[in-house]
Length: 102
Image (cartoon, rainbow, N blue to C red; front, side, top):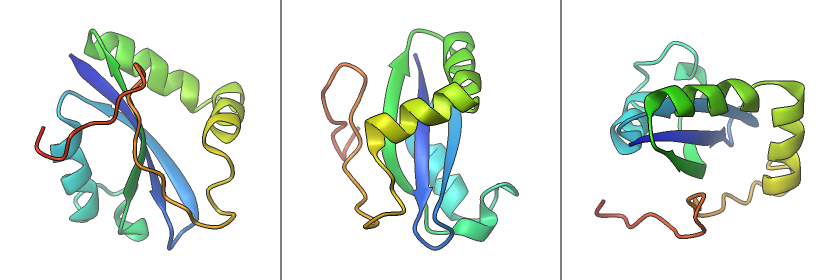
């Protein structure tokens, strides 16, 4: 099982798309400043999470979300996060929300 995640940085008004088998650990890594692509935007908030069957599928979805079509999908689905800086609770692709203790 692997995950595709979308993070939002209120300080930078930017999103970041990534994938990992352990999204909680990866979010901590981003917020600890140990990822060069995201160290300037701390704190990062999880705004979208999708579960896939494999890391290969997660990487394909991540690659799509980084295209112009994927960015349009994010804007339609998540809205313009820079407008109002409302950080929604993440929703899994199946419509459920991850529990904090998972």
